[in-house]
Image (cartoon, one colour):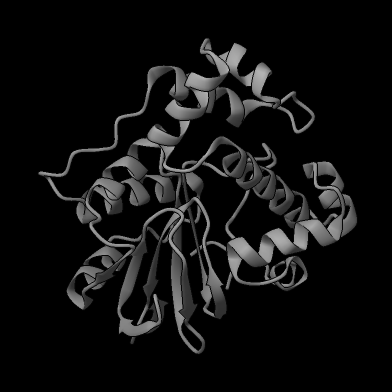
Length: 250
């Protein structure tokens, strides 16, 4: 599986597109939504013990799944569920995984820009979310103070104080209210979300050539072993396995 094309900012952008040879991942769950399209043929996805083959899939955030796209060239799009595009796509899901029909896949790939620049790909990702969403779906309501906190966390340095008192003060909510409002708004508790952001920073460090131990340290993990366990749980592979994959644009 190809890594997403990351930036030096430390956190992935709201819509992130990459492509390359597919691979296989064990059962895993991460907070990002993703759209995976087989350029030709099908890929296999396993959810709750059932395996199906499809031209493409959209996964809901924090939903456990395993993917087998060996021997298939894929286009992979990560969506931040709290971004505009992610909220539209998320609102159209009524199951952990939605299959993309061959006609939908073909229409999406027909519009995929040949220009590898980030702006055309970003626009294509937004258009893909719009096309796959449902007009009647209602996006999840995000508490305005939680949305403020999410914006601040995306721009925060790795060493920033992320204790509950500090984050509650930043959001302008009591600690108890923040805990409940965050889970209601985002769908997972605050601590797992912060761990997901930490993992994103580790991927950025790895993609820029840092050794695993240094990437773990710069992202705030206790050590490389802790980071690798987190990778296995969230990506279905170890950090070293993921590091061997290099991103390249479609």
